[in-house]
Image (cartoon, rainbow, N blue to C red; front, side):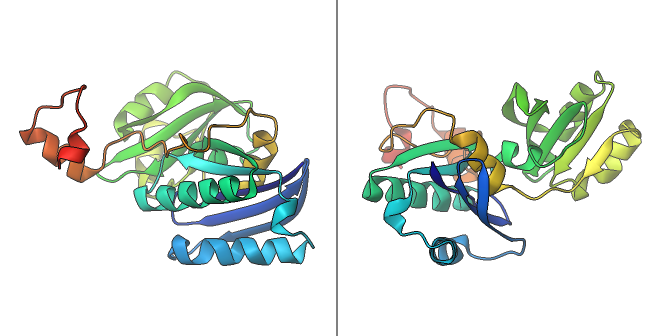
Amino acid sequence: MKILSFDTSNKALSVALLDGDQLLADYTLNIKKNHSISLMPTIDFLVAQVGWQPTDLERIVVAQGPGSYTGLRVAVATAKTLAYSLKIDLVGLSSLYALAAPAQVPGLVIPIIDARRNNVYVGFYENGRAVKPDQHMPFEDVLSLAKSYDQVAFVGEVDNFRNQIEAILPKAAILQTLPSAYHLGKLGQHLPAENVEAFVPRYLKRVEAEENWLKDHEENGQTNYIRRV
């Protein structure tokens, strides 16, 4: 199966082309760029380099969230457009899995994405499988959960949390990892395809504007409060 996979959920851009489990092309850009400008040219370049045409693609695998609101909208809009126009499968996977999968370490792997104000988007993985749902939580709560495990490795956007980890869990491994579109593609080829029209980002947390609006307006499950805004 010929697969295009990509992740624009945070600062780094990761794009990969796979034929089954075989990686044919891989590109990661780890600088702050506008993903809406760089994503499609990167895809076009890689497809041309491996000698494919867009119509050769059979499946799109995309990091669906959590992460940057803007980055997720770019990824999901691009994935849906490609899947719809090419009439091919679309699969969404966790952005936290894309950070956890490259870390070949034993024990509990905790990928984190900085959500500001000492909050994180966090996952909990053992042997490549999620043992808890992805969550948005204060980092202090993450450390409390991690203390119950013998072997722990924090991966992903770890730099801003290094001091806290070392103070509470001095034996924990701390590895700054980049998202891997290759690992997304490998897992995504074995999962059922999603409904392209209904496919949306997994934010895990409302945008700040919505939260501020809800402070002064009661949310009613029978009405669309966003539409009223």
